Amino acid sequence: QVQLVESGGGSVQPGGSLRLSCTVSENIRNIYVMEWYRQAPGKQRELVARISSGGSTYAESVKGRFTISRANVKNMVDLQMNSLKPEDTAVYYCHIGGTNIDYATFDVWGQGTQVTVPS
Image (cartoon, rainbow, N blue to C red; front, side, top):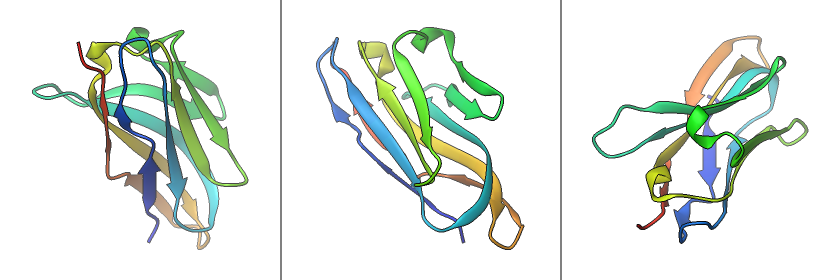
């Protein structure tokens, strides 16, 4: 069963940077989409960034500050977060869709990693 492992969360002062990483746990055949979502307390989960064969897209609130990147060989997706603001505080989730080595499709979420930017 395909699983995702996230790392890189933590606490940083406003204006600081963090890099989140998400790694697929096993060999897979193809990845269709890699995304980062976040969910702040009392709010709905929102899409932060997406990368696919069509390119990358970002939420308006993070454009110019966050960069999503993919390392195909390692089946990893990173989220570089710069100029962090208190409103970026949330649990960040990785989401990946694709096909495994047996051609079965998968759609999996990471366990979530906390990012805290104190005001």
